[in-house]
Length: 558
Ligand code: ATP
Ligand code: MG
Image (cartoon, rainbow, N blue to C red; front, top):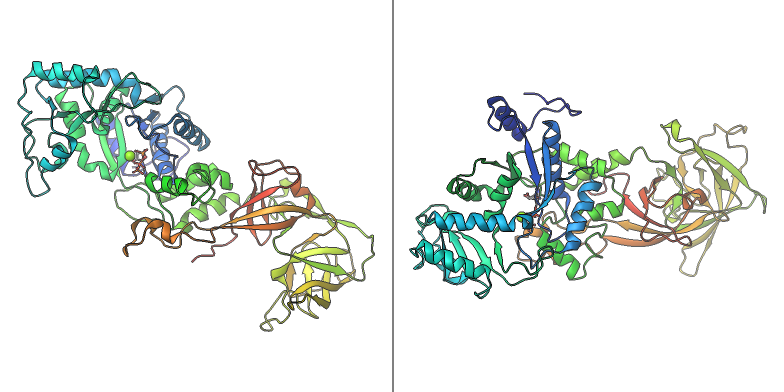
């Protein structure tokens, strides 16, 4: 089966194949409605991006609709700040829910009425066991559960108790359970599941209007029904909940019954994609907030400088299947590099080492024209100042090169300055520790374009910045947050915070060519040989531009 008339030429994934079949058979009258249903109890991460791209992507592919639904049934953990972050991140990723932003809490009254309906049908009851007692009597995979002594309560009594629960007459923890007659079900989720619980908590949207909150499983299927969702796409861990999803809708005989379909969640190496762990990293102070550029959150990646197209492309490349697996970090990094390939180049030095060109005039100055991009001429060129004193990368000099293959600068050796002249190191001035503090070099003034030695070849080319014109910047060099490929599932008993990479952030003072400091905040540039950088708007000031390294030029891990 092939794609369905959008910009997307790849073959259908298994979910799209199901939808195409449903459309062909007329199962939902040809309609396609999906939803992305985050709980606003944390920021979205790259795993959520997979679900966002899938749900919005499927709707677009089939000319359907996608809702952004806040699954806000647990007031203790949810905040308006998280709601705002979710809206912002989905929009930034490039998806538009138009007027279809909903909240499960919008449906609290309807959900309550449906629960009364279940009670009236004799399919739900108020259970006076505590939550602990319920847990203890639910049984196990091999043992059936014990029926609650309250499950034979009459309809009138249940209705009366339920209304009094809503009115606030019960303590926290009082519950309503659904089903009846299912205590022997092999699927534990079906053993008289809890549908509602009393919880006196202030809700970020409904305030104190409710002291009774519906459970996720009960809420989700009914919210899908209310919105006319046709295909309710969720991750594999909900497969065992699907019978309950269907049970609620079947028992209420809803006129429309959405189809739940499960796919495997994204797991990514060297990071964690669990909101609980991501939250702990923030509250325990291991990172600098939910949008720390080292985090796999959408906000963190945005702040680091990653662009949304890279994330969408990643989601496209990993595809959608039912097989569990872990994606290598390098797969994400490849998408980020591919996307950044088009940004302009620039010269910047991380660990500056002074070079003085002894045969260049004291007050001499030249401006060299250099292309903004080696392939894309449409980006034009910029002028780079050159003078007698330069900064080069400390790494590009060695007092004693290891062997003849060494291509950079060393005593007596020659290199070409990128876009500029060939220089030779004549003298090394060292500090007390024997480290070079300044190089005295001579410059071949005929070695640039137009000169007699323009074609002269030397082994290496290094980057540089004019010391007189260069601008001081802060460079934030990011690396992976964890040293272990699966920090969230360590087999040796260590806690995930024990395997944090202590070098995940290195702060460096750098010097860059002057025009880079005049870029608009939020611009991206490839510092030649160092990687792609992002002029971070939040941290940069006029006095001190701050560049985040988005990613190195090459995979430094594999
Ligand atoms: P937790 O981290 O506590 O398990 P969650 O990731 O399930 O929470 P939700 O806000 O409930 O958080 O997720 C919203 C939607 O995103 C759900 O449909 C969920 O299946 C999907 N989702 C969450 N994590 C991933 C992931 N790693 N890969 C793909 N989809 C995901
Ligand atoms: Mg969830």
